[in-house]
Length: 88
Image 1 (tube, rainbow, N blue to C red):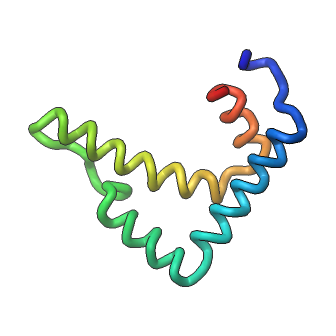
Image 2 (image 1 turned 45 degrees about the vertical axis):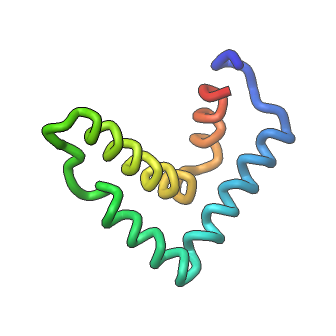
């Protein structure tokens, strides 16, 4: 999808619903516990450096997942819409 093309209402509703799903999942007591554990084991607050370049790629991938979860929960709908336009 070209960057200047708008998302249709169905796509926007899907983004809104997905955001709600992330919030509902990771805002519950168990969800917070899981997210906290993922932050600890997925290089969220520490370097992903390794002498092995392949390990760096793996570490960055793990880190990306946690950051994506947090972004989905914290970003406003307009920012998520802009990101979705770039991915499409």
